[in-house]
Amino acid sequence: MLRPFLLLFVSAIVLLGQKYTGPQPEKADLPYLIHADALVPTEATEAKEENRKDEVIYVIEGASSSVATPLASPAFLIRAGQLAADKLEIYKLEAKNGRREILFSRKKKQMARAIRCTASRVGDDLFKLEVDESLGNGEYSITPNGSNQVFCFRVY
Image (tube, rainbow, N blue to C red; front, side, top):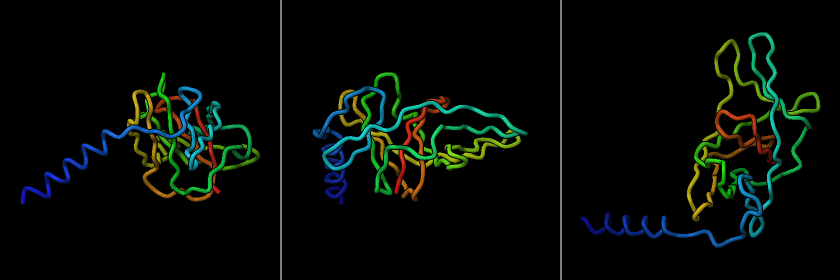
């Protein structure tokens, strides 16, 4: 009876000890989409906050991100410097009037919902960020909690 649990425990320790051996990010604090044996840097920019009639909206210039993936459950590699990988959140953006935006709060009630993701250490300062649910086609951003810094990508 104890043997299956012991085997599971040993397997978990082995998996946790594995290091990432693929391509390495060129820059720190920039999420890279993992595409097979290649890393694609996300679009790094800043969202501007707009306040209108009891609404807080964050806006990113440009109707669409230049960084795209066909993967519905993308994974990202991040070399941590200033960014804390476990504080990153993913949000779906809406393309409107030639720009991307997200309604964050209305009448002091938060409207935007972060998409579940998991950050795991895969090297000394290297983290893998994995989306825990399938993403539909559209525009998305990764952002540190409480920051206007965004890293954009699109799923097609």
